[in-house]
Length: 96
Length: 488
Ligand SMILES: [Zn+2]
Image 1 (cartoon, rainbow over the protein chains, first blue to last red):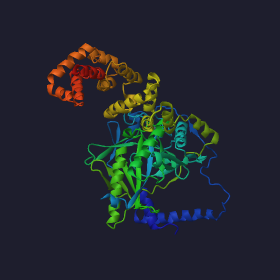
Image 2: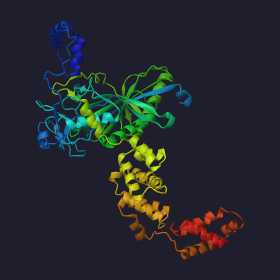
Image 3: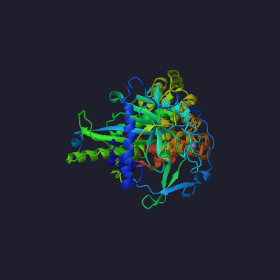
Image 4: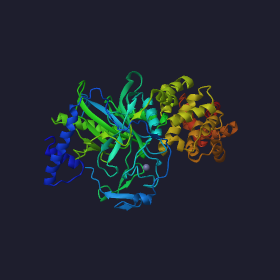
């Protein structure tokens, strides 16, 4: 297996996913197969190939520093599950 | 802990400073960045993280970041790129922050702190561009709040993160590094650097090691530092805590700790062991950034005179002591104010130093007492110079000038108007002074006797009584002369 059950659990926790026992097994198998497949690429000699950071051959796509109005506050909040006095309202965050 | 114990250990400090850039629009969308707007009124699908949107990099943010990097003596990397830093927090609607990771905008800079023989360079490891997050507020008090409120106006405001080398060796030096850094960034015009508005934020990494050792101890990261004063207090506390842990045979844990401003302690953040697994990966929505030499040099040409150069000029052009020059040039607006005063008042006969005394003394005291910047005050160089001319011409004493200084700054009224309206002009009519002198002599026979029997300092007391009786409006020179004459 290219990926361990613990690693799958760790990644699931980071992504805030709750997995059932059967799902843990299923994803461990699937992710391992994906990683094995990707490993085939490592057989290629890429010594002289510069790393690709982007698939498009573009650079410096920039916009001028100018403002444009965005959404109205009503629009911005329209899909919020909870809002009050112009704010989004969310469950309390525990810092410690 | 006594100082002998403390000397066994030395602190090693590195600072991470986040600074909001003064652009008109956000870093990846055209929303305005104005501070203090009504919540969620400067937002759009891009900065709210709605699906299907495309961020486009703001050219102005790149230019300001490059300007900051050049002012801090950094090397601009010819090519850099953006990464996604992934974590869940309600102030970050995309669940990732667009930042830079392995290819930052600039590296290898430095600034200088200290004076004379203890002058020293603090290295700047890297400077990179990223986006700010939204602002969280607690509903009611922090302990009882069941929910938090989110304002996304700040989300997407361009930030630079400036990471120092661990070259800082005391809490006071950390503060000085921040003061110099702030001054340079204000001069370069890249940011307001207002800590109370959150446009400059500081995290500190600190460890201790046996004095003279080359190895580093385990460091902790200090967060939630709200002012330069808290930087010093927080670091002092944390250094003391780490030394105590080591001396008790314990081990310092690598962790993030919050500075608790009320209790003046640092507190470990728990339950965040996984929070630092950010799973950085290249941002597929943004293409690489290539900055050619020529463009970088064109930005360098736009850099204004920086604080160090201005300070040297103040010493050579105005003949100011280095201390004065340092204080006056710390903020570009104060330096500007000073230069306009000297421009009006003139450079002869020690005038630049006189102006310096008033600007560093009364004016700075007034600004600090009211917690405002010079540009927010109603006082102008014309006010200060008129006041100095009134003193110079003998119309008012220095004491009266000090007494009306605050009123002049508060109301913006010209000093000559205040003096006329309140009848504060100096009494230079000899007969008027002579009348007061006669009364003071009559009322103080014992002191007069002391003076006549050879106690020269008794005269000072009598001068003081005359000044008091005239509300400080008598010319001290004249009072002295008349008193001596009368006492024979
Ligand atoms: Zn926006």
